[in-house]
Image 1 (cartoon, rainbow, N blue to C red):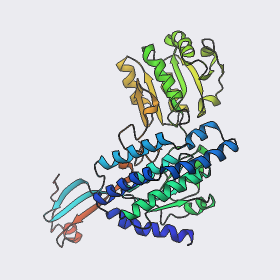
Image 2 (tube, rainbow, N blue to C red; image 1 turned 180 degrees about the vertical axis):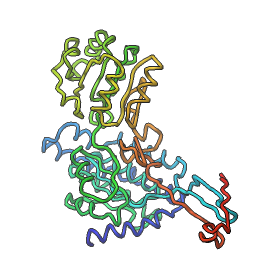
Image 3 (cartoon, rainbow, N blue to C red; image 1 turned 90 degrees about the vertical axis):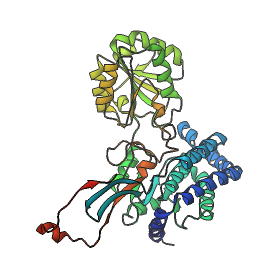
Image 4 (cartoon, one colour; image 1 turned 120 degrees about the horizontal axis):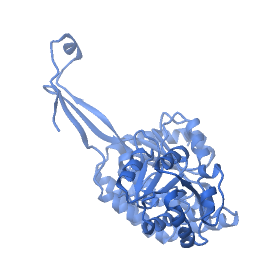
Length: 425
């Protein structure tokens, strides 16, 4: 089948998918969870082949970490699926109901976006999360994973697809693209694909945006900051910094830059260096470099998403300098202030222009699962439609339904009829 023809069939089935009742969609999710468990041996075997190839090709360790799909990741995926099943149905919810005139009723109702194309990195668990969210939200899905996870992605997709078809989903509800050349073809499918969500490097995301008419949602970089205010608790600050940097270093919500108020730097930084030991390599500005073992930081370091055990450090004179630095160098992903001063916290959380702004907690909380969304298709740093971890709410839009009884606009234009607006919900 021609590639464009196959994508057009997905579009055709998206209308059926959008009308499925919650019972059918939840039933498909439950079938997926059971099928993943029943077929885990084959999935792990496929992942073993990908892991071996990755290690032999000398891929970077953060990529290999993302690529691994084991019992722990499977359990997390299945838990996320059952969390989705328990969540309220995002579809067919009336957001507005207004009487415009007698027997002329306007309703604003949630509905799926339609066909969503997701191009994601080496994490096979992302395939499970993305597919599950789209099933719950009534969207059809086109998936393109990284070539380094080809075997695992195919194994997961086949299990999910078979379970969903048997549970009553339409034949073309999901497609897995495996040829990188087909990405270029996908970008031309603006008549059939309603939204693209790319997950990859800044350069790759920019390429997608520049070469398609399809709306794009997502983020390019995860340059996340922690600012330790002069009124911070050292006891809170050190564990938060270390967790934000090291808990999962390859994640887009790992901290990349530490900003420290000058009044607390001489106490905090030596203690941080002792607590982190050799786990973190520090790249410091001149002032910070005098207080801890480090390498000199360049301006480029403050614009870098390391995805490694490296942390840029800068001492700032006040909170305004910290906020200015974050808004200039950051990627509008997730940024945190550590402080016991409410006024400083309020100022930071109001003025930092990021999708997630935190007080006294790790940046690693920026995750759809940890937000109780069940999972996420990605994190959006834009400001239109969806922002932050994109869960169910970010995968639905709405339509207006107007029910009348023979009314025509000419009567209202002439003054024969009058609008009588009244909200009904």
